[in-house]
Image 1 (cartoon, rainbow, N blue to C red):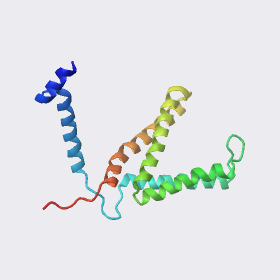
Image 2: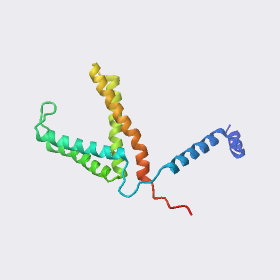
Image 3: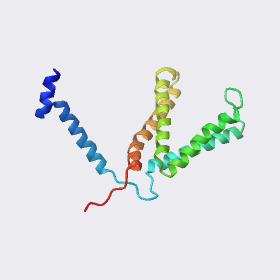
Length: 163
């Protein structure tokens, strides 16, 4: 079986090798279609993500200052500062179009997506809970989808003009 596949590969008739070649052609075409970011430019979805992350950081601190209780107890300062600091740094990084910040935000979105799917499958007891969880899934999934292309543009090296 392996010998036959090797022979087909050498003749150029291996369907798997042709499939990989076609996929690589599509990937190359997609890479060439991307335009690198101009100096100081950031994709709109990254700007929205930076604002959202900043608002989350501010809301965490504002909730603590307002005396919000979690499960009947006031959270300790490190429990408030850690997520506020992470979201604040992520907001700054996305505002400056840093790849690591967008990647970190996407990681948080993945956790939200998995949590929402779990909530839909096992936790949503009322129609309101189901609708809110479905909304969270839609927003997080949309953010994630649009940030993939933005990450590719942020990561791109500058192209040299063709001669």
